[in-house]
Length: 329
Image 1 (cartoon, one colour):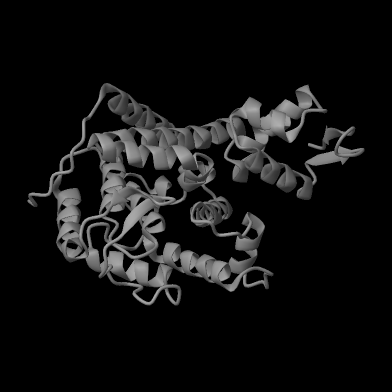
Image 2 (cartoon, rainbow, N blue to C red; image 1 turned 90 degrees about the horizontal axis):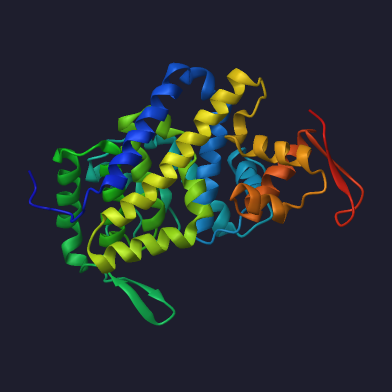
């Protein structure tokens, strides 16, 4: 076993989150095939890709990312389009990778960053840091140490006896701390956590956890920074477990709604259903008010409303200022 030892504290809060996730997964597993249809899996994957790129300042909308993946022409910066194409190719082969293989990790980076960086598919050969303006937030280990650090991290992950869900979160933090590449570290770290989670339950290969990360982007960065400051990766692990728990609960809610209410909220993972129910109660409710009521960003609410309108489930009557909504389902 490697002598690489990430520092973390397994708190009662972490154990409770792991237990709750496991219980919810048990319920989902019973009719998993009905819950995760091929259409929903594809849509969730595209949402994850869009969210992970959006975190890294890619300007493409969800609709544009979908069009790029479907081979349609999109009026957007070439770099952003290439990032979307590369990410889709990388996610297409992700679940066939060995999560403990440095070779597979480098190949995924090669695909993800192809033609975007000259050193794609290779560990960085220069020193890097993360800055807020001119203030250094994190100075990564020296480049010469990176190959050994990554080999040791992989060996640690392969051999440590921890719940896989917890292990995936700690790995994600340690990966970002090492910062093994000159670019693409955030995308690769989130992608590799998905792969590690997939070893626990195949549902995680399609669950839109990265969308929740995007909705909580500042908290994501804060959790990384706090773990670094306090030298305890469990701080970041707890944050990620909360998002994973929320994603699983959303999927379980979707399953329960299909079973008990008969409302098809497949691609919505519960959010669109909540929007419709809120509008039934108050047809004059605004996107901003919906965001506050449902604990979502206004950007997320507006995207779901747009989709509901396009599918004929919501109708806007009157102007944006003085009009109201009609539910057509």
